[in-house]
Length: 64
Ligand SMILES: [Zn+2]
Image (cartoon, rainbow, N blue to C red; front, side, top):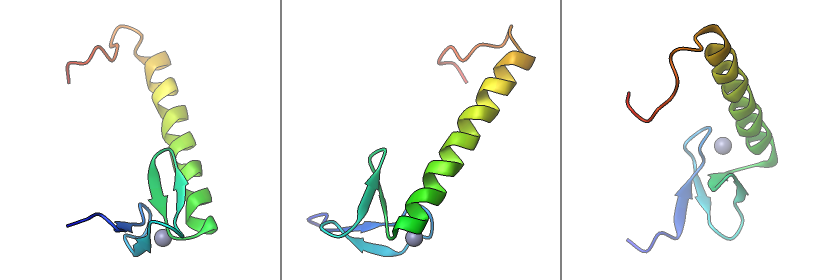
């Protein structure tokens, strides 16, 4: 319960805090998964921007 072990955000594998790669506050097991995660994030961001363009009246105002 000391939080020494983290889990890779991409594959869920155990990663050591000292050796893990950190991106946007998330732990990744390898450079490969770090890149995958960054890419996925960027795609999600792009999709959100597209969504917002398509639905300008529906703004993300905190309410789900
Ligand atoms: Zn991984």
